[in-house]
Length: 223
Image (cartoon, rainbow, N blue to C red; front, side, top):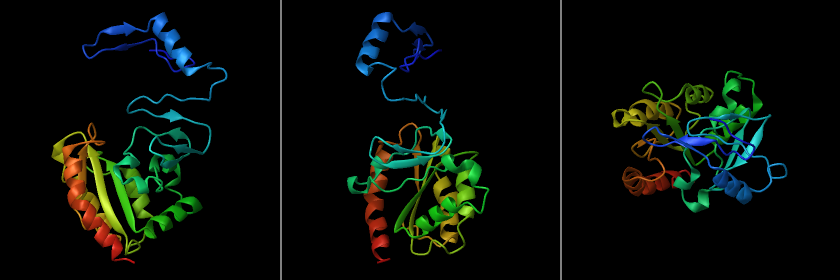
């Protein structure tokens, strides 16, 4: 499969595996809608589950208005800030994939500042995909930079995504104890969502209904 300057592929496979070529008419219509590739703003196409190299550090503005810092690569699709109330859409989001090579450098000043920012937060959501039945090594490296008890006063919410409900206890059994060891208060059940339905599901709605008052009450007790 090849992609032209507009990001239009030469075709696609349907659910049955049959190949469909992009017609000249479809390609022309898409190009007319997007404008001249030579003068249009630069665009990068990131396919589902993939990523893309970029030149140096950048700041992305997501569709929901959240800001995301990246360094060497564009991140794959992630948990959206739209899962929180509209007034919280501008809250900082830290994508650890953008800091991966630097997590081993304990002298990194920006990461030190980020851990301090987390420790000063009223509420912090720690989200991770399920990898080898637990949270990722990236999150573990970041948490290792936080001293025992440093999250005292922080209301923490453990969130994990996975491909099967067999991992549904991972956020409570594996991630929450680490956050508590670091001093955080975890007043709710951990949230586990299937990665194919994390943006909208009955599980998420039910969890939010029960967890929102618990989280807000916990955060209010800090002030």
